[in-house]
Amino acid sequence: MNLKGTKSAHVDFTSEGKVVIEQWSDDLEQPVTIYLSYEQLVAIEDWVFRMKDDIELAWNDGVENEPQA
Image (cartoon, rainbow, N blue to C red; front, side, top):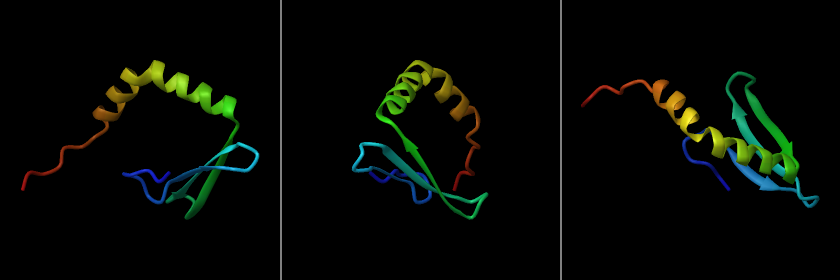
């Protein structure tokens, strides 16, 4: 799975069933890879679902208005 709106983000899984997230890091100037177990991924999914409103509010507060053309 490739994610829109990010620089070179890719999600896949290994033959052992670990979820792999790789994304380019501008800060490190190299790709960063994270391996998650199924249980870790489910815990993150549950947390995101519970925090959805707070996350969206924080995200929208951080979006700058683009100039109108």
